[in-house]
Image (cartoon, rainbow, N blue to C red):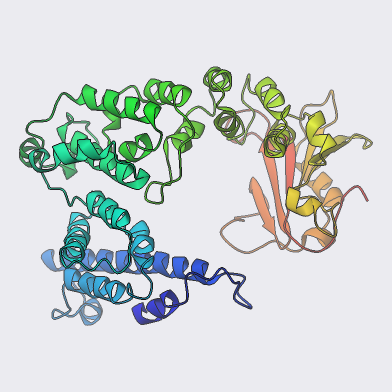
Length: 463
């Protein structure tokens, strides 16, 4: 398997050309191969741990023993083989180093692997052969994997200095490592304590300042120049701070975060989920000019949130088509509201001519530019006022009328569709979701019906 994956990695990753019959570029194929390499090695590691466990408890079967011979190479040796195969390709593909490390980022659950990559990077740096990898890129990776030292006495001063480095990724990797030390400095949290060795933690963090000073430092550095807080957050002891207040104060005062490949889920990503049911926090983001983040949070929840509708209406009154698109879709999907700007730009339509329901059509920018621009991406049905919900039987009948079997195809027999009574059912050319009326578990009433259409075959329920 590994040889086949490396054959895919050997494709010219600089090419964005789409490969015939795949729909993917060389770069996308290479990245998928690296992701599969990560998964394959994780599976091997799990199997090895299972074998060790079974042997220790005397539960090893003959079949299992054949599949896991005693003379099988240690896992560390097999990983060294992977590292060697990556390294021998770096002369031709120097960018492969960063791609690989993006898939094999450090993990507290696999210290051995992290240490192997750290030592490998240190060898590459010591040999003076960086394989045309930019010096700052290699330095950032060495910092990311702990190359400055395993104790604060060894690494602390250098990490703190790197927070002011001109290179964004170096600053972020330094912040991440400071977060790992803060994690070890922190008191017990009662959840992940089984992973910690407190004696080793005390030794590693000797000489550090009180924990609160690092939370303040990172906040100030982020406000000064965005790009470090998200990386710090990856490793920091979140249970030692009021996370809701710390993140909100940060996003209100800092600028938009730059993308950093090793830390894709940044503070903004956390914030848009954390405050998705908090209109007051979103209002503060809007007042601070963080409109994109405010919209991401306001549009996140799949069900209506009290107080969110007027914020979405305000956010949709924008000169930015993306803002209009996202806000008008959220309002149509969940709040039975037609935003005039979304209607003007063609993103949403509302049809009220039907006797027992109102119908929204949602169009994407891509579909609007298509040769069939009136094929909707989604359709949403609401009960005609004053009715507030349908019975499940009535809702199914409406689906058969609006999205008949000739349009939707047969039920897909896969993990998305447990039965025809599921809240969401997938068909050959789309899905149907029945939103429960009310918050009571098992509610049989349906407050709205969402139809997602996924086909190139023409369909429009109003035509």
